[in-house]
Amino acid sequence: MDKLKIISATVRPGRKGPLIAEWITEIARKYGAFEVELIDLGVLNLPLMDEQNHPAMQRYEHEHTKKWSAKINEADAFVFVTGEYDFGYPSPLRNALEYLYKEWNYKAAGIVSYGGVSAGTRAANSLKNDLSTFKMVPLYEAVNFSFFTELINEDDVFVPHERSEKAALAMLKELVRWTKGLKLIKADV
Figure 1 (cartoon, rainbow, N blue to C red):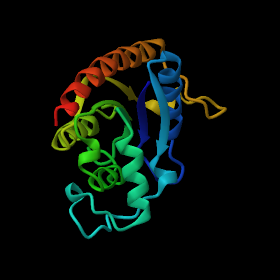
Figure 2: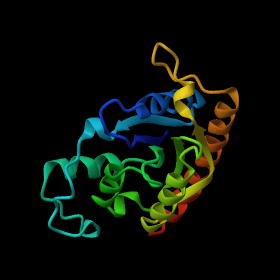
Figure 3: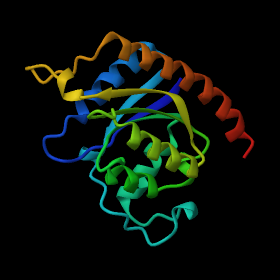
Figure 4: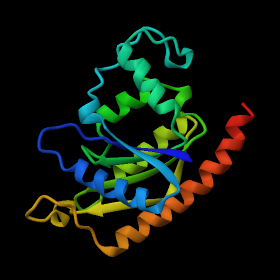
């Protein structure tokens, strides 16, 4: 079974991103097409890039980089869950991406974004652009939540609208298709 890594991008205290990441993780597990793992960058706690060699060389010196490399290398596809900060995605996600290069190549990526009125779409667009530089294929299908805090109940549970689940299922369906296709391309490299 293909492996899907869902990466929760926010790290600041009081963050709500993990609630949204848990929601999409549960939907992906129920969908049943992937072996799903949630990776929380707030828990992973990668330091700022501290490798001497360029990531394309894959000559990693630090144990945290070697573990990160193995985790990402085993993935067949990704879903990035990102908030929007200053019209972009959080810098810990950019840092996590830049630690590696070949491990990201030829894999499809869905995006779940959240924010205020823009629903995190500016962050998602910025992320899409950057993902392509890692030879990833960011999907058109996405899930976006505007005023996402209104979807968190008094028990701190994320309860989105039914249309959001439909969007998530459409994204996962495309993720399956692209994952199969990109495996053929990756095998040819």
